[in-house]
Image (cartoon, rainbow, N blue to C red; front, side, top):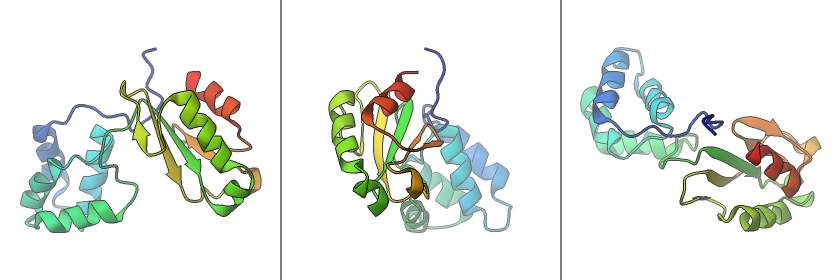
Length: 160
């Protein structure tokens, strides 16, 4: 399958590309977040090797850049799989079987929550409320919100 459903699937890290992104955006007002988003869009995550490049371009410390990256959970620190499955673990989803769903998916996919498969095919993550409580249990699969899930429905989407 040539299609990459996960829009954040990682391209190989390239320091020159990080410099190009930072150079293009550094004159914006408050450029750090736009640069981090652009790096994340380009590579699918913010590689630790990008932090000193960005810090240098913006005359910031590495700690300042690291602090922003680590504060916002939407910035990935590692490459994700080709398919990204985020299962909601908030109260409404838990009451409707999210924990059983997670256990079934871990077994079926051969990957634990918070991990990426060794072939980088799939990443399974927890999120804490997708705002889809009426359709619990809910998940975000490759950026698409879905509800009333069971393991079979998730597997059908992942295999499609």
